[in-house]
Image (tube, rainbow, N blue to C red):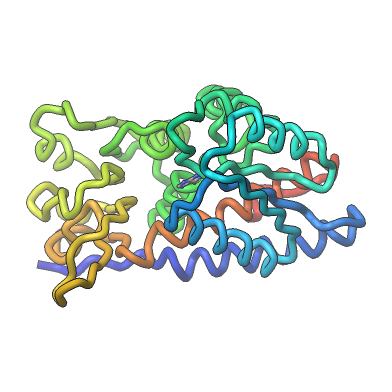
Length: 298
Ligand code: GUN
């Protein structure tokens, strides 16, 4: 059996961030201000705090302005909506991201709906979901956009390929399917109620796994030579007592002997998400400032 090519998401993300930094410098020169990204965090979830800190650091490293707003876990929804409203009206802010999940007493859909769609760099607002579904320019959720970039980098044209997306979330599975369809793939969305999942996956030239179940996709589910994109980030007990390690939704050790190309976990899709967020922010900045920009060059 062969050995799959490893799709280097970490390296691709570094290159993307460097291109964003060049565009950000040019934007600052043309607009007379930096492009700006605002991140709003409610509560003290440690994983969310890590993401938000990392976003802030990478935003500044790319030459953009980072605005962070934190609210206590018991803040009421009206307070959060007030912050979103101020950011919508602040001309220094091009992109707004409200870190999810929100505390249970807040209505995520209502908060997302309050964000100006032209600053919605997460691509979660229904206006952007509709734009993606109809092929209009908007903002596309960062993780699936990162996956399609890796696929195009690996395969070139995706036209005519059979793609199976495992997972139907609003954040990954559904937008992923739309992006693959826009690239003329034949798309199947599989999920927890799909019958004979392994048979469905075996027909795929492209498999995108986004279910959150450690090592679920096995080598014998794959068509030999398939391209495998693993969106899963699952923490499981490690070899040493008390230690954990990260694994994807794909059983990498076995799958990499059958696949043609595969993303590792960590170092595959994960690093792409923030790099694409920065990409979406510099795109938003040019659009909001009315400046011409070749978005395809990113
Ligand atoms: N929580 C985990 N991932 C994301 C993301 O991409 N965007 C937002 N807003 N929250 C998240």
